[in-house]
Length: 260
Image (cartoon, rainbow, N blue to C red; front, top):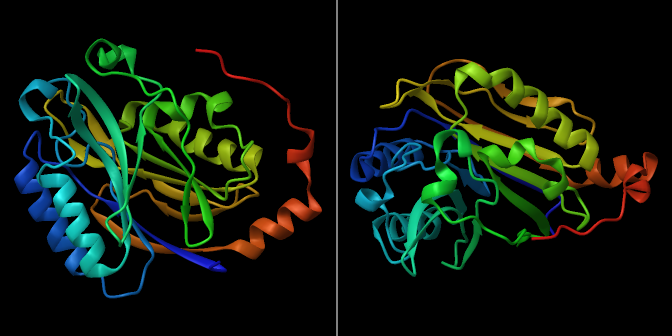
């Protein structure tokens, strides 16, 4: 078990529906990372932007993006995470991929689809909550709109890190800031949110606000600038253990079962 976990946040603009250019851009950014890290986290739909046209741009699990993630993970000896539009069994998924240095992949399909943009009409919703085991840390991956639904993310597995990747627009950025902090406090865990910047083809503006909160809701990193940024944040296992020892709120959580 690692006592510390270093997470690298990549807050960047995304070229609309241009996978090859986005992979080239992220390659250059990642090649510039000199400090040691354990996980590199990219935003939601990091090769396309938040697109409702998967018929034109979806990839398979053997496609260019997954192969690129495996290559980066192997060469840098890190885990690489982010969400990608994936097609499988004639369905489309907004899929979180967590690629281990070994090439093993953990997947999570977005549970809460953003009906305001019609995501629920085009993509298939995931039905399974996923907990990733990495270097002795338990990580719960979530995608963007999932942030608004605390029941699904409730910490009943004693996970250490709640990890959100997003395309969360400026118009609703106050909700992003507030809910990330709330999730960390109520689940007594680190909460990491990685958001994009720039403008998409739908004229939505994104201003980042990627952030890391500790178990007490104290901010450890906050990228408010509307600029591309790379930041490495070290998480401490002892902070989690001590906080839960002294403030045992999780022992009093409600018992429930999510029904389909």
